[in-house]
Image (cartoon, rainbow, N blue to C red; front, side, top):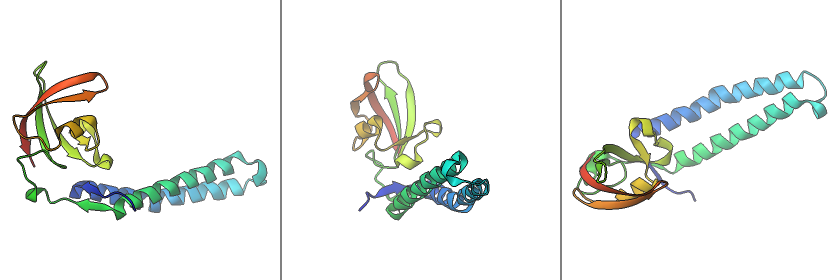
Length: 157
């Protein structure tokens, strides 16, 4: 049984769209590539055919994995979450106590993580260090560059 993954409604819709695209567009493209390579003759020494078949296998594996994630996906109603503690889907404003830099992150499922838009994986070191904490709490989080001290300034939904 696969692990339950929590998504925002937006993130779940993106995942569904990706699976639909892979099935409707990418499968057809690979099928065409296989057919074209097959038409070129002897399959035993046909590198294009081998490459297309390998790409097909990788595509089917990706579709299968995404469908597993969809099967165990749950949407969280953000309006019902407790804003007094950092939880999945919380938006957290933190301050680096050493240099004063402030950052705002939303803790999301791994598949939704996008640092450019301020969404970090719930499994990331920063998210793990913030989970369950409240406004005013100070935490030391171990990141690849070492230990960093943060203070939680704000939690919102």
